[in-house]
Length: 447
Image 1 (cartoon, one colour):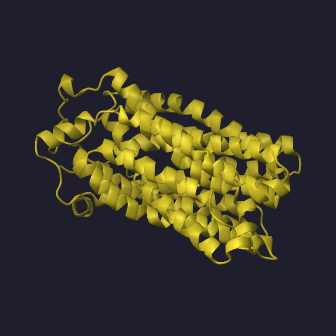
Image 2 (image 1 turned 135 degrees about the vertical axis):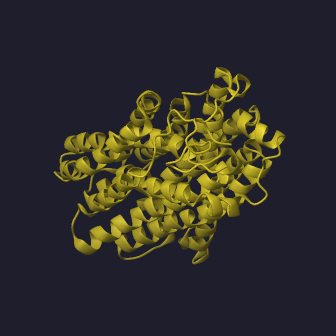
C-alpha cells in the first residue's frame, strides 16, 4: 500500500479504517519508547554537536595551517564527510529495520555510534602522527555517519508506530527532544571543559574529554533500549506476511513523492538546526570574537530551552494539525534570522544572547512537528527505509553542507549575514514543499 503526501491511505474516496483497539499501544509502552528514542538521538546529536562546538579547537590540531580559516574549513569539511555516509547507513540499516525489526537495529546503531565517538577522543593529532591523524579522523567520522544514518530515522519510525492514535505528534516530538538535549549537553560539556581548563590545556588534552564522555551515555541508552518490545505495527506486518523483500526498490518504485517531500522538508529543518544553532557557535566565536566559554553556556541554555518546548509543540500539532505549525516555524526562521544576526553583530554579548534566543524560537516548532510528519508519509512495510533515505538526503544538504558553505560564503563575500541568506533559501524551499503536503495529524498510519 502506498501512502503519498496528498492521498488517503485506503482506496480512492474512502476513509482509512480505524485499527482495532488491540493495535493501540499502552501509555506506559509509549513512554518507554519515547525515553529510549530520545536518549539514543541525544547521543547522536551530542557527538555531532561536540564536533561542531570544538571545531575551532580541533582544526589546528588535525589541520595545522598559518591561516585559521583554512584550518576551520578543513575541519568542517570532515564534519560534512560524516553526512555523506548517512544515506549508505540509511539504506543498509533501514532495510534491516524493515526486514528484521526496529529494536535490534536501534541497539546496533547506538552501539556503533558510541564506539566511533569515543575513538575520536583517542586519536593522535597531526603533531604526533602527521597525515595519519586527519586520515583517522575522517575514518572515525565516516563510521559515525554510517550508524547515524539509521539512528534518528529509526527512532522516529519506532515512536510513530508506538504512539496511541491522536498523540503521534506529542510522543513523536521526543525524537527531536533528544536532538535538542544532545546538542545542549554537548554545549554544556564544552562550556565546562573550556571554563575549567586553560586554552593550552584544552588544545593539549581537554578536547578529548567530551568525546570520551559519550561512552556512559551509550550504556544508559542500551539499558533503556534492551527493555523495549518491537512496535506492534511492525509485529502485525510480520505476522501477516507483509514484510518487503526489497524495501529500497519499493520506496523508489512506489513512494517517490513521499521521498522527495521528506527530503525537501528535512533540508529546511536541518538548515534551521545546523545554521541556527551549531554554526552560530562558530559565528559568535570565530567571526564576532565572543568568548568561547560564554558562547558554550549560551548554546547549552538554548538547547535545554528548546527541548522543554518541543512536547508542547508536538501536542499542539495533534490538536490543530501539523502543517499550520510547520509553516509558522519556517516563516519564523525567514523573518528572524537577519535581524537576530544583526543583534549578535553589535559587539554586546547581552544583545547576542537575546538574538540567539529569538532565532531559536522557531526551532522547537519545526523540529518537533516535522519528525512525526516524516514518519506519516510512508507505510509500515517500508517506513524505516523510506524515512532513512529521504531524511539523510536532506541532512546532507541542510546539515552537512551548510556549516561549510556558511563559513566559505562569509569569508568570500565579507558579508557576516551570508549564513542568514542561506537559511532563508532553505526555509523557502521547505515552505514551497508544504504546499503539496496534505494534513496527516488525524490520519491512521498506513501498513
